[in-house]
Image (cartoon, rainbow, N blue to C red; front, side):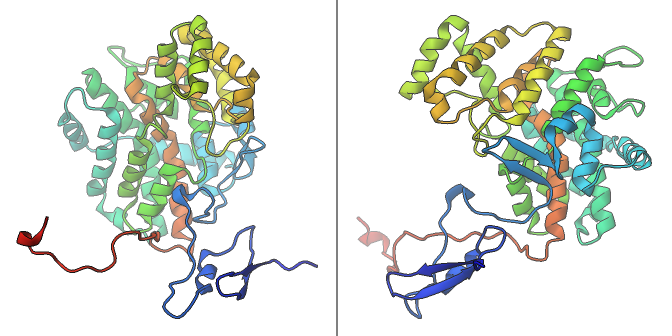
Length: 429
């Protein structure tokens, strides 16, 4: 029977070391013993952007990028998108199991009754310029919530963590909607506890003079599916930020604000916006061949294709493509869709993209859906942050219970000057 170890020979010294392998990994600290002498710090791993470094152990989300698999707590994303709701999926992600009917009723009731925010939040939002980016506003407002709930600092109390988790999941759509209403110049619309999670969000976004807002059920369900697809995605940039900032034992509002800030970037939460800009720039199906040649020549970039993890068709992209068809039946066909479909067809048949495993990802169609539903482009990353909140909080809760976790503190490879003496001003060239 083979041993679960790795034998390393240091050719500098001729010494051999045996390192344990567990769950397909070795501990980085086990490399520290490999030195050339007493003054040698020991071997470190150099892994920019953590491309092959596991920073934690998790039971929440499983991804197999080569096979195009995404599962929450073992459940395939395809099944959850077809059969579940966002709140049911959120319960699953947080608790590890699907709820019974009574558990789901209690959970839904709890979230629904935490949707209101303190009136001072409205004053805070009103302090932003009329043209402020809603994502920048959301970062600030989420961080400000920590001052409204000072008890949230008691992060070692499981009951407190649970209550603040419920508050964040419930209030995030309210905060997002308020940010939207501010940039649109509309009065704030309050939550309606008679509506579903996504129905209430649409109410707070789009309600005007009607006494009772009623959303189109197709659009409400489409948003629910999009929320399910974006609920968690393993150790991505914003989740890593949540865990890293949370490792300092700060309150969850501050950690979520950091995660929202990470999501703000165009390489993360703003990717679907970049897809729309690309499709608009192409302008017509007739211009696609020229655009493809630019991409191959290095003077253009194919947005919405390829993924850091997936080396196959992103399973979320298939679901979103079907959802897009249902949405466009209600809203009318987005003129950019024909360009997107033709671009996808050409790219999937072109050897250049096939060889590089550049398949459509979740961002390729989501922006088209959001635009068809009436969302301005600046709101796209905000629509990502709302459902991802449950993933961030589940990862934070998991980290809080992990005895191996410490405050995040990566090492560096120092390549600067060795010690040198201070030079007086008159002696500097």
